[in-house]
Length: 113
Length: 114
Image (cartoon, rainbow over all chains, first blue to last red):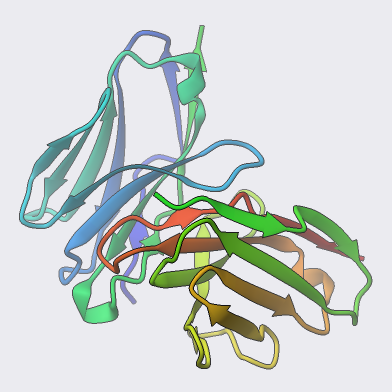
């Protein structure tokens, strides 16, 4: 079946460095992609989204890149801070499926002081 | 964005019993969803809660086990029926204004079944 997955389950980053979290998707019909951050004991928090008619979108300290050719999505976090330590999920949706979200496995990001 | 509140935040239940989880949104959202998240795992969509009509369930989830109500645009309930230890999980409510825009999540209900 179709799935959304992540390349690496964990990422350790030095405070102040940039983080890159990767995500692969297999549903070629997906046209909406979204990144969430989940801290311990909390629900997923929206970070940034991107539609398939774009290949890059920037937010505050975050950038999402979409490569439809290889079905790859990435989240870049600039100047990683201790508060960025969390689990990060990518999710994808498709207009042909009412944009119901399918979530990837998640990457745990740990920021080293 | 919408602010999602869930009650209870956690519960410990006996097997064979049922628990109803409430989800309240601070604004009228078009879409409401219920997800399950096993500890340390990703999120799986249970169903879409439809206002005034039966919920739309995903493969592997059935109404008899997870009855859902949505009487208006700001409130929904999920009942976990006839619970077994396998139902121990985090149950999350999400809401959104349009289908191709972000869903916003509550902090979940942590359910343990003994």
